[in-house]
Length: 513
Image 1 (cartoon, rainbow, N blue to C red):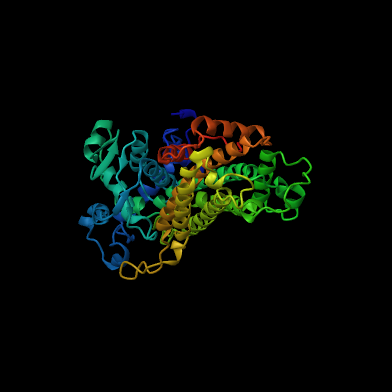
Image 2 (cartoon, rainbow, N blue to C red):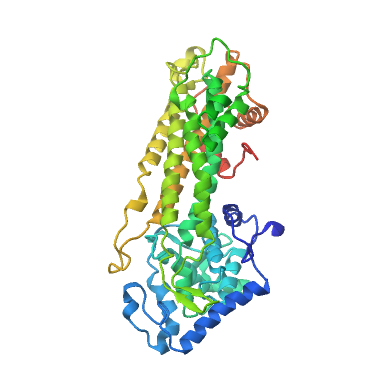
């Protein structure tokens, strides 16, 4: 890991890229050692202690939670309340978050708590830092959060692990948290009165997943643009649909950027040939207008995600300077819910665009001279070979499922917890949906990489003189080295799985800078 590139929690706001780097173990977690930061954290915790000694009433500290806020906790039992909070929330189900997602959750929760408005102690922050540094990952069920009052149930698994309870994944094995904490020399915490609420009553799960979704969507956008260039070339299309003057007339920045990338990939600044078709079908001609929506949405969505990431988002908040308790609703995940609903819509539209491009280039009626189903078989054997026929069916299935998931989760608020949580965000469900849409879209992209390699290869058979720029030409050569031309029918699932892995690892440096 690169220690010098590590973000320092407490010194500066985190970026999406920092969360991604931490989630992939490229950099370690580093908690600020600055005296001013540590003094601010201590000041909030000390103020809470003093208020408790003065018998102040604090929601979730001297009262019950949610609808039980009218129940006063006897002073002798206040210390036990955080344990009960994470215990009774141990009811999550579904798959466990994977390693990357779990690291992102730990990073997102730490990024919020270091704002110094949650009343937590330094040992709690050091505990989260220790889990990240030693890669001790709580097993967090993905399902069970309505996204307000925060990600209570999934984050209860983080709180429990810090206290030495429940299970963790460490060095590839699932083990009891207490055993692993002992091995790394990290003492289980006894949570202070506000600390259970501070860990759990926030948006860390949905925000973490949003950071990962944003990163993957940005790469999908770039790959979809490169694939469009390959498909224009393969279908003998008109590269002048992406003219600079044309796009200056409708100057959405992301849309114009996609058109510029296509011009560079296709060397389309030279004058058009007389024999070129005036207009290609929409899935080629309008590709910048589809991918451009995603490109133009990304900066806005980044602002929403990074603001949430660097916010104090539990309740109540503690102002250590004015010594006030502020009761509010910052646990509400509405901004992340909207961001994820919007992102999954724009990503699914890109999947649909690529699906339509594939439908064109496998169809001998529309691909301008390529064989049906892009079969590479010739002579008598052509009769029994089927090329990419089934691949196109699979792409259609993956695309249909992605499109089905674009129904916004944020409109399905459910009144919960005795109508105390009567309007909730569903942000975590939206984030999980978005990741599933991305998974399906990456499968479509993987199939399109095979199709692009096949289609351009078949076009070269009939004398295509490539007009690809240097970068796309190098990427095409890499695809040729890894994917043999499909001449005899063969199973493609192994190649598809490897390509999906490569996509998630951002193997190709597409439009860097």
